[in-house]
Image 1 (tube, rainbow, N blue to C red):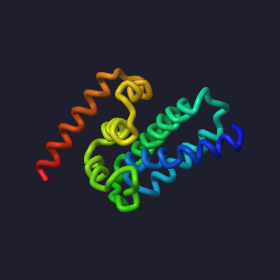
Image 2: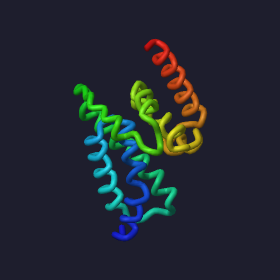
Image 3: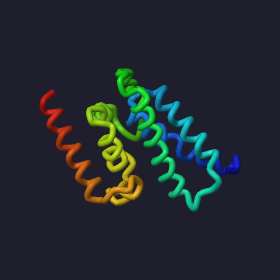
Amino acid sequence: MENEKYEEYLHEYADMVLRLAFANVMNRADAEDIVQEVFIKLYKQKHFISNEHVKSWLIRVTINQCNSFHRKFFNKKRVDLELEWFADDYVSISIHEELALLPSHERVYVYLHYIEGYTYKEIGEMFHKSTSTIASIVTRALKNLRIQLQEE
């Protein structure tokens, strides 16, 4: 990949990748490590059809890296929730505290739909799942989240 194009993608998508990684692993340092791995993989890619293809590819690779992270540290609990760092113009702390209550596989779909603005169809295409499956997972996740929040 050309350095110029790489820098353009890095500038345009680094924040999105970091937010997605942080929403998944809930730790700033680990999220930053994942971002580095994702952008190393991007640099090694030859070319992409369009910017939207790059964005979808980055989301997919970020999720894969997060899944690898979870597999690697499955039995190790990590409680470093630097939520004050993550609060920015895009989302409030309370949303991320609530998202943290969801299992990671549900959290990703909710995050992509409500925070990044993807439709169920677009998310389904990214993860090779039907639109109804994604809608069902998100609906169930929100229902379970409501129950958890009412119990607190």
